[in-house]
Image 1: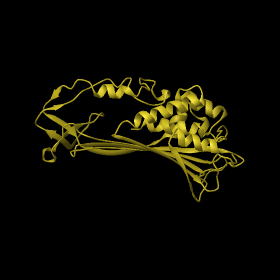
Image 2: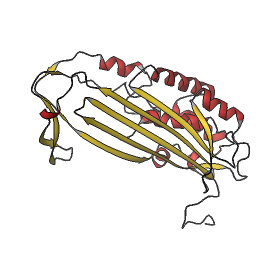
Image 3: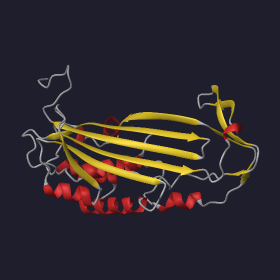
Image 4: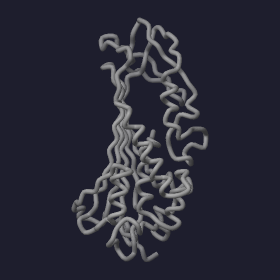
Length: 272
């Protein structure tokens, strides 16, 4: 489980501080020809998201007190990506962290009563089964199924099997006809997952930001280390919960860590 929307927002913010081949790879991956086109698309997407009362988004830049961001990077980050910088003391070799978070929370159109929750068999994809709590209602509920093709918002490279950057796609789908379902049983669940986004993106062809020999983040800081900066890690944590209180909650948090190019994890050597 991962959030293409959070991932796209993080990469778009990162692109603002890059140049050369690193910028070219990011623009190609995100489906834009020029950085101003990417910035316009990002601003439009955030504006669309702000119209959804169930959805909230936040972004920030945590920069070590020894590093000074370029004014143009800082102003674009704030104006376009709504990411404001804050000076911190990392006390390690981390120079900057780009962070964003998305939270979705909504109520059931027709609520479930807690006393109707019952345990039943849930069938897994691998063919095994397990008994889990089910939100249950002997009365009538409404449900709809639709093809997700054309509804997913994210980088084009992640949408090769179908999808679009059309924000109205999901809105159109949730307004589809609602056939009656009775009885209705929905698994009650809460789970989370973590993704090494950097490793996954490198496999998809976006390798330059994560490569100490290729990364070009020269448009981010005024006084970057002489050897430069690179993305040492990009990690995303997602969580989803569905319960009988009539709410669903989904949250995703993405952290992008920037370190000097001569940085290496403990136990590794840069000499070979």
